[in-house]
Amino acid sequence: MSGNSEPLTPRAKLAVTAGKAAAAVSRAAGRGSGSVIGGKVALRLDPELLGRLAQHLDVVLVSATNGKTTTTRLIAEALRASGPVVSNALGANMPAGITSALAGGSDAKYGVIEVDEKYLAGVARDTAPKAIALLNLSRDQLDRAAETRMLAEKWREGLSGSKAIVIANADDPLVVWAASSSPNVVWVAAGQEWKDDAWSCPSCGGVMQRPGDDWYCGECGFRRPTPSWALQGDYVLDPHGSAWPIHLQLPGRANKANATSSAAVAACFGVPPQVALERMYQVQAVAGRYDVVQFLGRDLRLLLAKNPAGWLETFSLIDPPPTPVILAVNARGADGTDTSWLWDVDYTRLAGHPIFVIGDRRLDLAVRLEVAGLDFRVCDTVDEAVQSAPPGRIELIANYTAFQDVRRRVGN
Image (cartoon, rainbow, N blue to C red; front, side, top):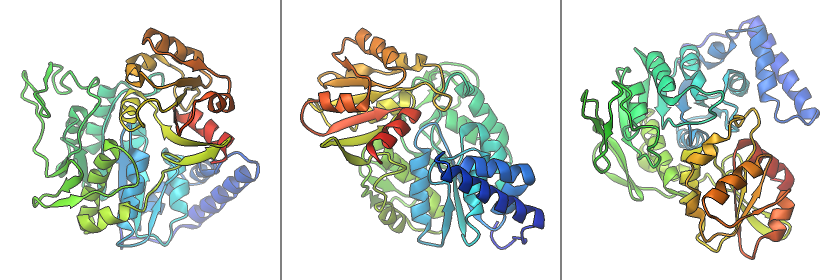
């Protein structure tokens, strides 16, 4: 934590230098930012490096299935009102990527760190965070990630007795179950659009009752806690009952929820809601998400959706029909190789849109759309899809590696 830092050991300094060199070689070879390979090299030389790099920082960890990259960015902007920030802003959220990010933050006051759900407990142990934001838990990458109830259990065990302030979504039963082991929780009413992973009680397995926005288990009494922060329309309600307007350049209800959680985190560090929310307005796009780019004479808005909950939120913010929509799905290692999740997405919400399908698994998606009774066209490339689309701005929705493929092709 701040003020208790010790100088880096010679071994740690060597590890940082070697990691930066490896990252530079990777970038020169055109293999991306190099943050992951740089972090792996550094941690191989000094396995304790992550903790050493975090010791002078007030650390915030952000974890969730959806929205963690955006929320990390919003929190970082808010905390810059109070001092310099180091963050893994591009989303390299496993220990190697986090280590690389912190290696560049020797002068920072705050570390705002996105963490993959599976690694949260370990990173929290290494970095002694002051705050941990937990936004949501839903099915994702079914072939590599644990079932959501198991992930919630890992979080619960990892947070037990933690000294961190846990800022948690009161509307997600799995998040509440995970956070309830912590002695210091700030509850935020951020909403939960996707409920299909939270119909059974994480505490006893009973059936959850969901009257309106409330929820409870009729068998064991596990229930929604009373929030002290809340999203209400276009306003954040703080613990004193004051309403602060949300002005974002990022679209959709989900980002207002992200801003609400971010304001609650910023308040833990003494940044008032008004200041925090004003600073969040600076964020126009996050690692390419929400960017509008020109390609082949057309405007494309780039939207990332990696799992059923993310697709549901994304459908709510696209322009109405007859806006053309391109859907891009891959199933590489970073996506998860199991595409069965496509059957959990309600694609009938796209009725009336001209739909174009691309990506490695375009035929899997085509079968799903056929069953949904939608009209669509399968295309081999984003170029073909764009050239085939009727006039108007095009909404392009892609999962993780498909999104990166499109960004490279359109020069974003």
